[in-house]
Image (cartoon, rainbow, N blue to C red; front, side):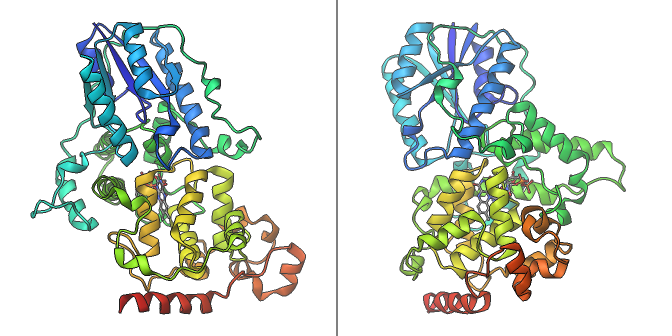
Length: 470
Ligand code: FAD
């Protein structure tokens, strides 16, 4: 018999439960991708995500071709296309791995019911998380709202989660009327993607190469180096994880194997890294259980928070990295150039936007959504709400990142600042953190004055937050 494997954000062949199960139960499988951004509600993929998706689909198709298959690409209404493809291929079952975004959940439930009504079997699986969000609950049977107990529970479950054995057989069916990848029009018309091409290799192989690079070196210093934006101290696996090119199980097992190989002195402590993957799971847990938080405040007390009325010009300067605050500008330029930003800097730029400028966190979340190659509804929502202070397990309201002391502490030699602010690169280290102390430097370099006074805007934010607490 024939089965359709509907690829979505699981663009890999290894450790892919839907593909694995379909291959073991059916004589042949048809790998299908349907481009249907209109089905993603308010969160159709942004420009950077589309760029990644193009290359990830290309890589998946190439991997399938090495096994005499090909990715069948279509565009339009998913249900109609699935029904037509069932008819064309003679398939009796559709397989997929689950998604957790609210719009995708609703759509998938409708599709499942409609296919079953037509006598077509549907099998869906988990795969991109260690645990399905509904498998974890507090003692009272409620969803978790605080990370630490969530992680304590999840941590007890993950050691047993082994990746699937390699696919032994993949008999892929090829049929007509698929679209060429270019027809999806995912690439930018203007060539602004050079920086992204330099930094990334989308696809399953690229994901494993990135993991190897990380495991070879940075994992041994992760606990400290992860905070230094000038270093490659983190894994940079976020876009690969988002598109399902690699799974947490695979990463975990690779790191455990590495630990076994190394002697005790060189053995890395992988716990801090696993904990970060735990934050990803927590974000998905929250998104699943509280789907309205993509726009609504997790903490409803914030509904009456007095944001400063939208100021387009402020937002523009923040987006373009022209705020006059070096760490904020360096981060925003890194984002624009590479489609990625270091986590510590993400916290700083988000704090500056929501606290110093008191602009609504929605504006920041939208900009990240369009510009990040790892834009992920669960992680992005959690990140923005956490920094703004309105999220589950949020940063306390009085935590307002000071961008100057943050760069002095985490980029003491101003290497990161120099990389992204070339107009200031010849200034001495100390001045790079506070260029406004040298009027002549600003004049010479064209670097702007700070758009707000850091101290005064901090005080004003604190007062506003304090009022909310009472
Ligand atoms: P590593 O340090 O190597 O961590 C490994 C993996 O753990 C990451 O790839 C990621 O999947 C996960 N992870 C790490 N930190 C977090 C976190 N705080 N929350 C959730 N998962 C985490 N991450 C995204 O993947 N997509 C987003 O859209 C996104 N938006 C964010 C917005 C804001 C305002 C903030 C503060 C953080 C955001 N993050 C987002 C989380 C984090 O910044 C990135 O996951 C991380 O920087 C990715 O780099 P890495 O893969 O090298 O991370």
